[in-house]
Amino acid sequence: MISTSSMHYDLCPICQGSHFRKQYNVDGFEIDKCNDCEVVFVRNIMTVETLASYYETAASDEFIYTSENIYFLNHYYNKLKREIYRITGKTSGNILDVGCSGGYFLDIMQEWNRYGIEISDKEASIAKSKYGDNIVSGVIENYPVRESFFDVITLQDVLDHCINPTEVIDSCYKMLKLGGLIIIKVHDISCLYARISGKTFYAILPPFHLFYFSKKPLAFILTRSGFRNFKFKHIGQIIQLKTVFYRLSRGNKNSIFYKIYLLLSRFSLGNIPIPKNLHDIITVFATKE
Image (cartoon, rainbow, N blue to C red; front, side):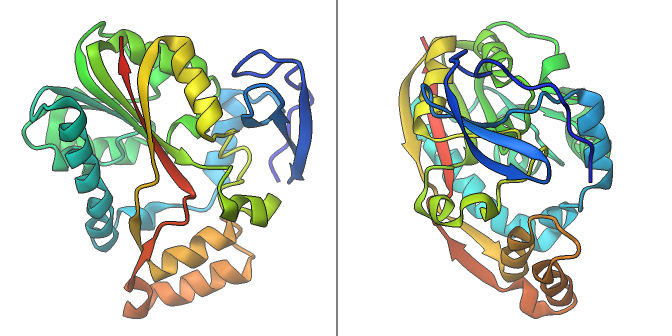
């Protein structure tokens, strides 16, 4: 088990409120909910070094980027592309994908000038092989701010990993053109599935996920930075059968679900597509004004 920090937030890291209540204790991490903005967060103060040690020992998500699963990811990516056009009316421009992995969403945006940031050196090298110096290896906190440059910035499954989400959103605001679009995709901690599952909800993975959002805290953090015109959507996805068991295992290699995942990975049965929309994933669109 990763050693947890003895230091705790005294104020909500999103709204600076001082009133929160304990939700769960998971693997030694205290998870609280702010009574004001309603964000759920890991109260232990984490450092980059501590998180790095966790990522080194965590179960790998590399199966997500196999050619078979990328085919299913594209189902969501194409929906996102259509939504970008519907909101902005644009079919080209400058787009930044934060946490771009191997550039798989960028591959869908063929008509655009494509930029990306990726923390994994391995995935960043894949993206760089396609998009060259437009891809930066690292985290958005260290990304050189290009003020009023991008038409669209996407953060897909990223904001819940960040140590300081408010700073990340502030940076995105600076980098977007006036009228530019930000898109954030995260798990929805307020969904029925999450409320029924409690601490066993598959996305509750401290310190891998440090924040757990719903509409209210997402609206707060975006409004604080100057974004307006929010639109929230629960966009359906297609996942592989084996992915269901991987998520249920919550990355625990000793879990029976993880063993089932490994077994299914050996056979084509594990690649069977499963439509999924439990409202456990929320995507928010907002514009810079």
